[in-house]
Length: 136
Image (tube, helix red, strand yellow):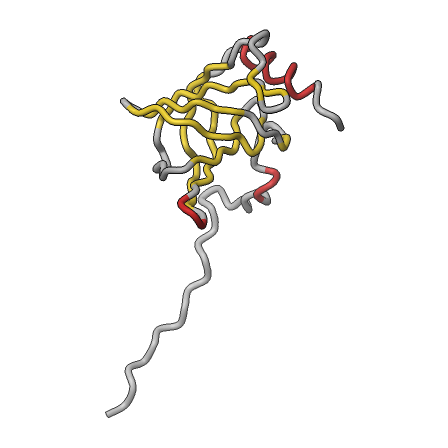
């Protein structure tokens, strides 16, 4: 009995418009800046804390101690922290977002990328103000 024949593999299907997708780092509208901030997450009836990995006017990277599904809608509160203490002079930024990607890491930690879904010009100004005070 002869081995079954394996059909030749097809080349990957190009995007419908024929364009090649841009490299990953060129897909974002806003550049992300590495920044650790305290965050409070509201996801349905649950609330939990997180830490930012990076921030831009369009979204942020987060770390937390529980899984969060891709596509989840959440409300995110960002708190300015100086020397491990929340700065009460600067009100937190509350913004609605959606989890674009999520990955579980060792030790039960989850990292995720969140795109801000509803953000006003005033909220963008808050982010620009925070980022402008970072050392370059």
